[in-house]
Length: 253
Image 1 (spheres, rainbow, N blue to C red):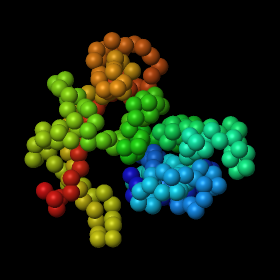
Image 2 (cartoon, helix red, strand yellow):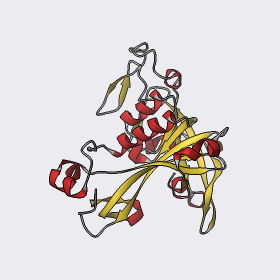
Image 3 (cartoon, rainbow, N blue to C red):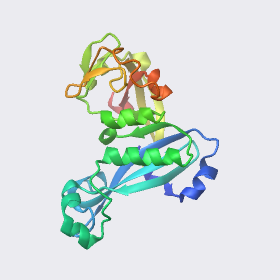
């Protein structure tokens, strides 16, 4: 996903339709950081950024790209304003931060941009993001927009298999049979083509409207209790299916 967004070019919205017309589009979100020497820069603070290799003084921006088989286009971006920055009226005034701009998490920024992209007429079917964007609130929002999604999760994330048994995601890999692994190219790097082995297993989704959950333990009991809670919820959610996908490096196995 970082590869997809890093290779994209920012194109003004007026050009999106012609570039993406008739193509299967995936909306990909990722953030990047720029090192700064002072906290006087809007949004600058000590925060994590993969671009600088860890925690450091930087600005972080969230980018949204539209990706197809032939096109990679950055269609929107938003500067992340940390909570301390958003609450500091003096710094906001000096830096010229508009009053209407408040604190929003990166997942909230992502959902806002995806909503805006669809409103402009971009026809996407899928959303992708890394572990930063795996929260249940965002995933529910993506489903409500009629999109499927694929997001990274922590190795310790609790998932429920088809039989109702709960697992840490990393332990569920033991259920993958050898013949289920498939080798796929994921791009090109300095050492040539990147290839990984992939496999997936069915799991019960934990973000659909018809589930009664414990938010702290991501439990999903009584799947059908609220089946008709929101008749206008998108069609994608109504027939929701969960999959957990694993990736491994071929030369390590």
